[in-house]
Length: 436
Image (cartoon, rainbow, N blue to C red; front, side, top):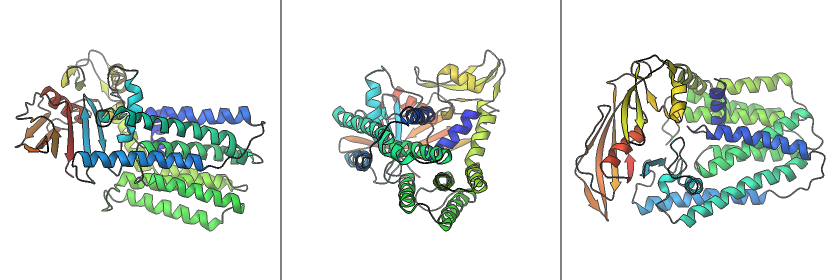
């Protein structure tokens, strides 16, 4: 349960389904604290922050350029949301949240592993799109950002910590860890158009203003708090706002992020009221409650679900590339079974009819598939998934095929299951443009 709560909290500033970011942050924050204690008595020098900023902008431009070239190369609608698959590696991307730059991580992984990673999206689906040197350049940029973040903490930021009381140091180090970790993550996985990438620099600017003036006026904190509450409340009371991509979860995340950084900023003041600080910290949990609640229900109703001996469940088999119906041979929790299978629990890799899903509840999705091969009629071996192809059109050397995809609520890992059906039909490289 603790890991679920921590996962929800880290999602405020580094969202995503993979639990990898949680473990990376739980390494990154203690590493900075350890560095601080080791070097706290050594003299330090202040270096300008511009190189980290230039590196951050370069990484974002890198992802933006890759996204733009990709969209132009395959003649995709400019602001479309699309899924890319290549040799069982699957990824989705859009200008709202670009993932193509993650291939700079995927290419390093490919040199050490024979297959693709099934527990996280590391951009393996894009490795055939550009020459490898392009992604190696991205890998160098990522390495530079990580080294720069630690270097500036050791030097310039540690310089700012001198003469502060313990509370100020705790909030400043925590704020630095969260801000730097989030900015690096978003520059690789997210991009310019993610609001997180605007909110955090705004609070960094406020911190600089506070340092120059000595403190910020109380009305500034009140205004920041009101803005955070309004944005978060918008997420509480609406399922969708017609603001391109601001769903309720995104609004809660941004509102909570505002409150989180307001609390961190206030905690760095030389004189901070303990009651106000406690209130701000509690408000973070209140603001994030809709997401925490969903994660709690996920924990209670999915990961803690019990399979008795003989309980049927569905599982996607990556080797056979198909959905299998299996039977539990022991009494076991879903989370333990998923761990035994070596899968990411947040992908909901198994489904248990009558417990985690209801068979017969269908969802219909329309998409355009772009592929080098005409799919023809697509066989559907699982009753949980039906893919119907319509007449294909050959355009500039690639086939464009409208697909009607019907999934059952008990279909585990829908993206992987769809990919398995297409791969078994001889299509191992394609793009799906999803209709909203």
